[in-house]
Amino acid sequence: MTQQQGLIIVVLTLLAACSSDEPTTPYAPTGNQYQFMTEYLEPASDVIWSSAGSIITHEGEVDLRPTSDEGWQKVAHAATVVAEGGNLMMMPGLTNGEADWNEYAQGLTRAALLARSAAQAQDAEALFAAGGAIYNVCRACHNKYMERDEFQ
Image (cartoon, rainbow, N blue to C red):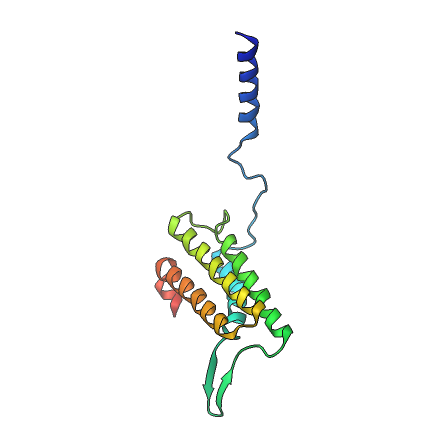
């Protein structure tokens, strides 16, 4: 064996030792998927949905858009939570490992980032559209993965 061949073997051995299938940071979800959805994603999504569009009451139409900088900031914060929720959905312990699941999770992140941009721009129409996009991703994922009796 030449010195050059020996060096190549040492380098390859070191490179192999550096790579690992183990995550560098251990993941430790604090609950199951149901808890994640109801205690993390749903409350943040509700902030977005209750801040977009309008409702009709006996007294007339009520515009739901925030009326202060603080209100818009609250929506931007909630959108950030939802966006990161999409990333968390792909974390070991919360993901189901299917490609469609990850596509829905990534779609949720994209839609939530649109909501955050809309809130930062204080654009009520864009927030309404982004809220609709979030709803559509949630509904599509639920249609595929959620048990039918959980809808009631």
